[in-house]
Length: 73
Image (cartoon, rainbow, N blue to C red; front, side):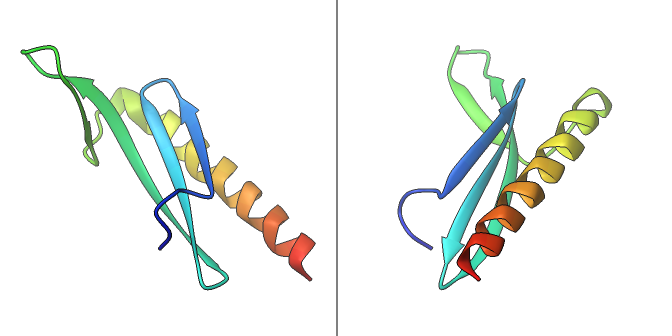
């Protein structure tokens, strides 16, 4: 994977980070949270209330990747 993501999609505290590697793509979906000390961290664990944003991020990532692949052909 490159050092910089190809694209990011953010909905609320949920972020889909899209990486391009040798012509294929991978996606990391994380949720941001604030620690008791006030520091921001990321996790791949989700609450029930996060799931709709996780699904929407995944769908938007799939659409973005599909558009990238269709322009390469």
